[in-house]
Length: 468
Image (tube, rainbow, N blue to C red; front, side, top):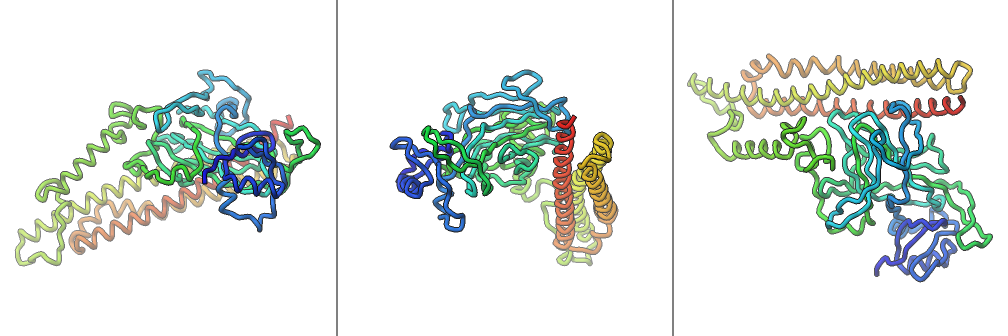
């Protein structure tokens, strides 16, 4: 059976497709009315949530992207700490946002949303109002490209607001794998964002022109981009991609950012900034060298020859010396890689500490701006304290961890080669790498908390500016 019945909300906006049998069931239960033979419009109050047939709901309640129904907002003053937007439906050099047709996967043209840039300009794309059923599961599907930079300082978010209340909206971070995409294809990532509308709803007159009303929730979707260009194009229901093979970037772990349409093959070319290390051409050459060294027994660096010190004939000084040199070279290369990783992690911690200082200063300045008589003054004090606690936590992490990694990547290697086998040396390095991964995860958690605090400060600032 084919999903050939179009489903719209109470205002006629398409929100999905369903099977004829399911459509008749919705009509019978009073949750929808026929518009024509191939279209139904949701209009009735949903059944109690504990009686839902979940599989049927999920099959039907998709929300699809139609760029024609979205408009753009621009951030005032290009200040990343102040999400105060002004309406602008056009496109100018200072406002990086537009609708444009681009090639889809099959070569056809599809209209998309293109917005954001590498600078500090922030742009937001906002859907028109969707009238959705209350207390009901929905799923918003779309393809995303870009939205990351090489400094890890970008903003790439989806927000869902009910009743236009952006101070209490749902926020989904679409960068750095905070949310895993469903599928990768030609540098694009397919996202499926499930959400449930609240129980509260407002009644609106249906398009039939009758006096009957339909319980609905006024819902808005918004994408926010900053410090990195991003592109959004429509997706189909997930079932349409069931036979597609996932094709993630083979060098994702080696690049500081994901694929972006701004570049010819998704990343800077070998002659552009960073391209000597991160372009596809450079990384493929590096991979080819590694494969060539691994396939040639006597070629490449010494670490390709594994040495077990327990198998060495200790009565032969030359054999012992050669084994120790080989093991030392192997451990040194591992240590060099570990040192590079540790530098990245501790640079991240330094950046987060600097961000803590900025947010604390912002909270204190905002408190002075709104005054002690404001009902939000206590919130600014609390947020300032929370930022200080997070900064202290970062300092503790760095003070406790940095000496260990500096020592492990330095002179201790000479001692290690005298007392441990090749396997033991690699195991030691692996344990250090695992500890570094755990440290990086803690830093990422703190970054998420700082994002939340920044959003709360923005909300307080918006409220203060509104009162003025």
